[in-house]
Image (cartoon, rainbow, N blue to C red; front, side, top):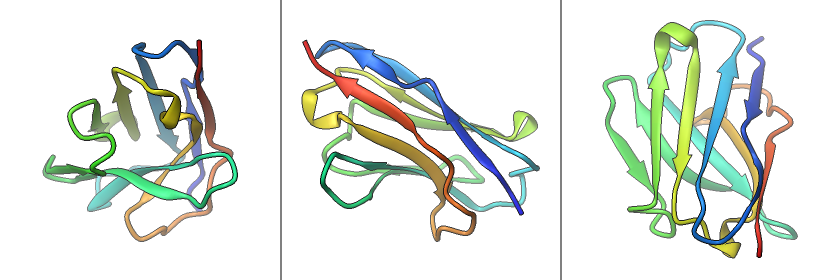
Length: 114
């Protein structure tokens, strides 16, 4: 069973940036689509961004133009570069496949506040 470990979260001021990482316990080369999700306080988990094996990406409207997802198959890692952060981006961030193939990791907390 694959384990996913998210890291890179923290407290940041509005307008700031963070880079999240998601390390998988085995190769992700054969996985077509990896994704980042987030769960804001008191709300349901939502899809933020997806990336295919070929590098095609798409984003939720709320983060389009500010976030960038990437993957490094050699390192079994998926990244989420988050720029121009807003208080509404505050959430626990998770990674998984686009169809939730693996158990959820613990996530990484992102708090955007002045």
